Length: 226
Image (tube, rainbow, N blue to C red):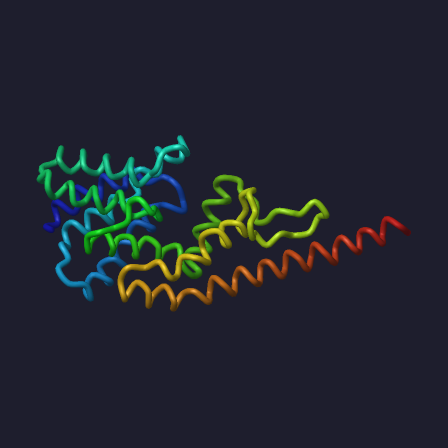
């Protein structure tokens, strides 16, 4: 991929990215990680992979404005139109579209090609470990989601089986379950190397939230009874 074509695609990506959790640096991290993984994978089309990585989240704006939309599906179509409108062949654009459409956790549209599998793994690695925790907190702060919910008795819930959104629910529902869902050997290795950082943060935050909640409520109750 020559520098001019790369710049064209990169400039379009930069015009599309808006929120702090799915910003330009997320895209660059996914691209860099994908290129690192690809060095150990056979028969990779590096230009398809690069374009797919750069454009994989360009549908985020539409999904944020209308949560009923899937950013992977929207972004895949936007990428196809952009590429074909700017001199890329239809076959090439279709391969990029397929990668982007399959980069989310979806049973009915799993990645099939080497490039799609690498993009999937690179994107999920940015949800793993400390980076995944930080990005989840950024996004949930942006949307006004609380760190945790309380039971009817006022106890801090840990996110297990909850319906109401919270960081703890996001961790239990998504973040802690992604480590066995990678397609490439290098992706699995990197994910496992980052796992403990996420576990330690979640457990420390839960412990601190419950400690202050339980002891503070008891102290307030005693104060009010004096």
